Image 1 (cartoon, helix red, strand yellow):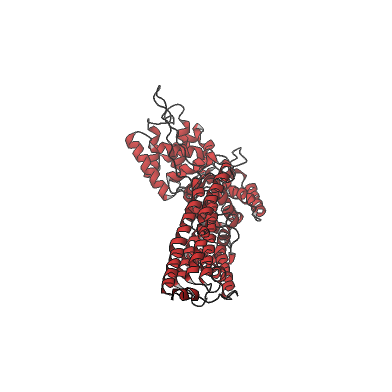
Image 2: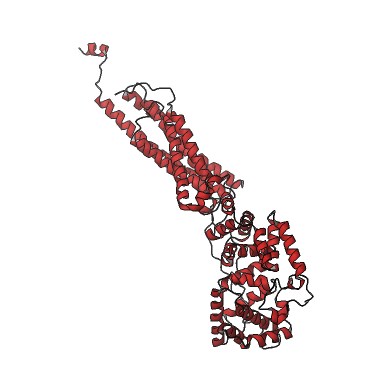
Length: 562
């Protein structure tokens, strides 16, 4: 029943398993694929071979769109596009050839009969479109022209001119109503010239007809306020190109909000809307992620059109803490993102499993036959590999458990107090669950790894006693002598909890009781597994072996008895 002496030599398979596991785990880590984020390496792979900001701006110059091309020039300079000087020369050449079109942002044959675009306007730079619509003679000209329109949508928008029920605007047919009148005419003219997307046209027509029926601007007034904000910042061509890529009134409102709260980011925002051909996705992304999203969008713009479209299609942040990536696998990740994500996670599990099996053969049980490992050993290594892989995934995916910070660009609604003497309602705040900080995750991971090390040390001690050529009763005495070692997981757990609390008080790590008490929890789990799963079973086997062994009576005692 005794086990022979153990082989002190290192099994040759152990180092090979550890090296293979490390190689597989590192390759999996280098794959540029993530669950809730995008790596910079994947953005770079998506942008390869696609137009840059300057090349797209050159296309706008070729179509005589001076205003939008100016935005692309500003954005290309800020991201360091090497083609920006060539775009600047082309834009300057076009502006010198058509100086009268600079104020309007480009040529529009539909607008020329109304304002004679080629006549000098006194403006040598891009001019907000509402400056041309506010003068009385311009509004009379537009009213006379649009009143003959055969479009039902245009007529519905024009009828909102006589609606008396407004909230923040002065009615357009009263003194002081010039801003609302100019916005109504601007909306109708954009509708007439089909400078809006078809979805946006249908929504505006529905809102206008509802407003006319109820004699209240209602929801349409919010759209007019947004158009007032955009019309004071964009020229005719810039506004037209933007509205062609906006599919809803909501998107127009979000762009108006972005124009108010982030005017310094507008070159990137506007360029991204034209670059991706979707103002909706750009607005949704920036309203969701705020200034961080603007920085991510800027990084994508520097890589090319493909990178911008990928970022906006997935609507996830850029993981800048992911480390290096395997750029050669970028094309494969773009083609099969889900498959490569599964390969990455399976690589973590397989790599850690091989490392644990190698450590098991090398450190825990060096005398065991490596060619005939038990099923329990595989199950134990597999369970530990899953746990450690989950910790690796959480540590390398910062946005998996951590919620996005509140956006600085969120829409804010301010309701004035309509009745005097009534205090404004107290603003209610919805408590959102706190995001788990990176320091908390790192602390939990360190405590888990410490308990795994203690678990392996206990297993090695049990195997060491089992392999000694000693009687079962003596092995039982040795096991009793190691009780403190088998309880060491509890001691390490309490020490980890105390250390975490001290570090939190000293503000070295973020205050979080979960990070502290997780050390105790892992210690309890470790000791429970060691003593119930391993120590109890080993002692039972030794007791049975001791009962089955013959009892040898010593010679002197036998002679006395006789």
